[in-house]
Image (cartoon, rainbow, N blue to C red; front, side):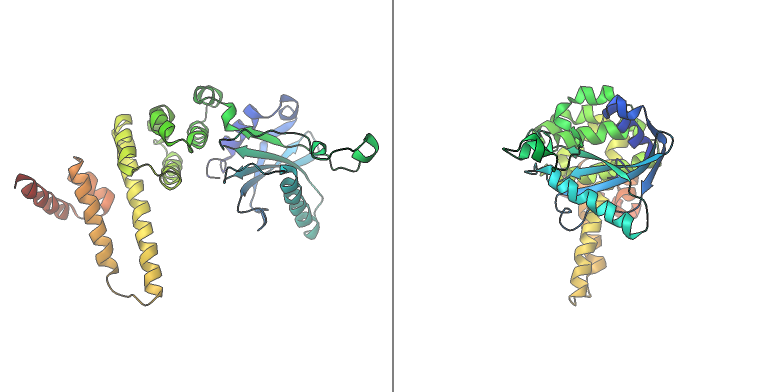
Length: 312
């Protein structure tokens, strides 16, 4: 969702993946994010969405709906989920006194199994042409990341967020491949990190990698070191931020249960552990202070303790 929340990313994605007969009439410069989330409780465990309103031709408005299949399970009959989703949009419009808008559904899929897109009527058997006219007929645009190699993704998309995001999602269920391809995935990372938006996007990617895989953080760190100093430092900063937020959340839950002491001590202890790990990895005091929030004099004290134990 982070990847497709920017208008520029969606414009290029639609241009490069939609059939030409559709894109030639879509006025992509009119794209406007629809703030409503239409996924209901029947869909949210498998889907999330981002919706854009866009002009088509001179007088028509359509909704371009990006649906992310985030459990990577292929629905038995995807048309049923899509039909329920589109009905939710149309009922919302009716309740708000609005005119109905055509919905163009895009399913973004990155699972291991191959997704076969077949017409809705093929799920019904034994119907002649007379009965088939009572079946709802609609199509959806399928983007299956397995249809692209990493090199094809790089050559197809100029936008770095699209390149990196799609390659990461494509390989996320193959941890060996993630580690093997990480230098290719992040080959242009320094360019991305030159902007605030790029830094925020990288934080999202790091969170996704850490939460969606069981790969040890230090393995990622070793890979980031080979990319650049900037990538290494930003990765450490993000990983530390995520860890600290997790600690705070756990401590806040404990506080709600009546545990009112030791919160700051717990956080500081964890920061010192992280600082010692970074000292072992060869980071300088300034970087460690920046990442952990500890004062440089405290980092230096920890370094002296570490060196004295190492000498002994």
